[in-house]
Amino acid sequence: MTKFDEIPHPSHPEHKLEQRWTGKLFMCNGCNEPGIGSHYTCPQSSCSFDLHMYCAIPLGLFHHPFQRGCSFQLLPSPPENTRSCNACGEKGTGFVYHCRGCKSNLHPCCAKLPMKLEAGDVNLYLYEKVKKPCQECGYKGKGWSYRSVDKKCYLHVACAKKLIAEKWLHGSGHGDDLQTTIPNLNNMIQKYHQPKGKLKRFAEIVRLVLQTVISTLLGDPTALIAGTVKLLLTDD
Image (cartoon, rainbow, N blue to C red; front, side):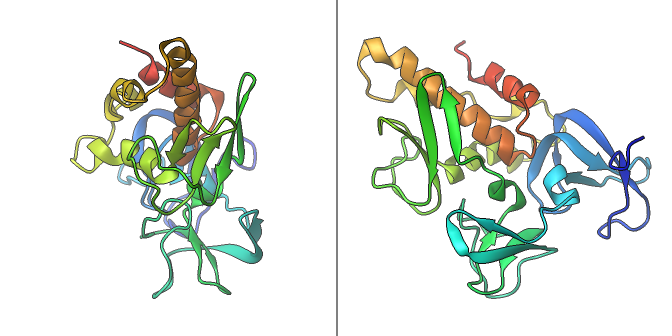
C-alpha cells in the first residue's frame, strides 16, 4: 500500500479509510453530494462511510481565479449566515470551502471544475457570469456557466448538477450505475435550434461539456468516468 491507499480521517475516527473505485453512485458523507469512481471508504462491513477524493484530501488554503482576493479553506460545515455555493447556487450541508473574509462558499467538487475544456478545435471556458441564457433551463440565472468560444453553447453548472440529482432526489439513485441514474439527454440536444449541417457537431460539443462537468461534479474527472458518462450521452 502507498501512504494514500489507507488514511485516517477526523470525520470518521473509528476506522481508517481505504481508497477504492466504484462504478456505482454513492453519497459522500463529507459534502453530502453524489459521487462515483475513485474515493475513500470505510472497509468495515458495519459502516457505510464514503468520501470524495476532494473531501478526503483537501486542497488546503487556496485561491480561485474568480475571487482572487479570497482565501478558501475546507470546513466541516458552512458557517451560519453565509452564502450559497458561488458555482452552483445551492446551499452546502456538509464540507465546504469557505472564505472567512467575504463569506463565500464553494462545494469541494465545484471548486475543482476545470477552467477550460477542449473539443477538438473548439474551446469552452468557465465563466462567472454570462449574458445569454443556459440552453438547458432557458434562463440566465446565477452561478457559473460553461460557454463555447463561438457563443453557441451555454450550460449552467447548476443545471449539470440537477441532471445528476434528478433520480437521486426521488430515491432511486443510490447504488445505481451512472447510465441508469442520469436522464437521457437527447431531448436536450434536439431542442437546440441549429442548422441541420451543424447539429451533429453542436451535439458533440454539448456532450463533451456535460461528460466533463458531470465527471468533475461527481468527484472523479478521469477519462474512465468521462467515458462512462459518454455512453449515456450517445444517441439511442
